Amino acid sequence: MVAALLPFLLVFMLILVNRNKVMGVHTNSRIANVIAWGTSIIIIVLTIGMIWTTSVRQ
Image (spheres, rainbow, N blue to C red):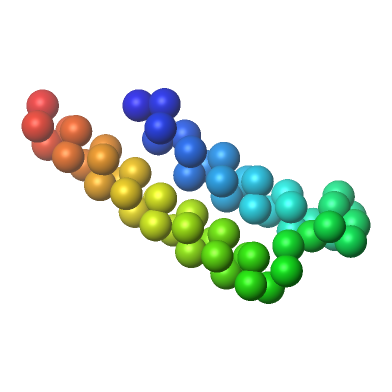
């Protein structure tokens, strides 16, 4: 169930890399943000599905 932590880490990482104060000129571009948030949403949905199927079986 360690994989269930991945969505939380991804969201916090994306918030961090988009802070101009932290990253300066190295913040994500708009297209990189669309790809990153889209991937994060897919991973969140898959993680919810994993937790759901694991809990239903038991």
